[in-house]
Length: 436
Image (cartoon, rainbow, N blue to C red; front, side):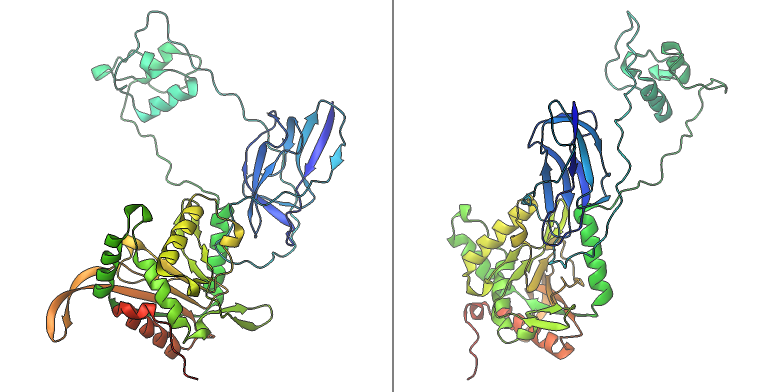
């Protein structure tokens, strides 16, 4: 028998360490070559690491949430044939699931010491078999939470215990009759009293993986960017009429058209007149990078947290192309199949809370961008329209701008221009005419 030490691989793009997200094996397991053994995450991407060899796992380094430096021992295998005792890990291709919802800067070099070796879990207590002739209870078992816990710790099947309490309720004494040695020792009076067992008041959840990255990026954006918030209500009655008409003219399999592609299309028209909002700020160089192309990020809630897939060159796409691309990217993000390229490079972001949109919100800028537009819920309200009180469909637009680079006047003017397009939806399809 020989041992093979697999080191944390170099995942490219300047990464110096990786965070353990989840182990898919443990000491004592026998794994085959190319079998998934661990998921790790860098500041660039989430990566599924396969086993480089076949063998039995002797030890692993790090628990979920721990960071392991590139080149440090990650897992040790016992091989049945000769193999090098220590070997450099081959490059591992990034998995399709990206790690973070924002474009990320290379992390600072940090060398994390290996964590203690994870030991195999202790064997569970074998269940105590019911005595011969003991009838198995049918229906709901009546027992206090404390007695259920005692039975679980002793491996007793409560369905096989004959309760001596009112209505067949299982008492502490009944457990001692079934398994006097396994039941927890108790020198107090065995008379059944009201259960005073305290329920744990807190649960600790370690912040790891994508949720950790989201927390770091949101904190950094809020801490370093002076947000200027602007909210404007928009009469989307005509926009809703157009949306309903277009949905009726399309086959059902094409998918329903939401407000989102209409707003994105209107935004691309507006940005032609407000190019200072289609900008990325390179803090390291102190430079604003203005983009002619409009790569619109679509904030998407997924089971793993917020992700921002990017509709590239949105300014050249037609309405149905936009709708299909937004739907495709959202589905890939939610199913954890989006590539890193589909989640980075946005120049401005649009977010929508859908049916939970509320009245207004204050979206956090997706750094290094300088602007984000939020859609709130559209509702019918009585408003004054052309001198009369009528019912109209109203939706608020909530926006945030980086006040270092976008003045309040320009921010308000941009949202007013967007409002104008949405309230007269025919203009959404007309490109901005620039004066020569």
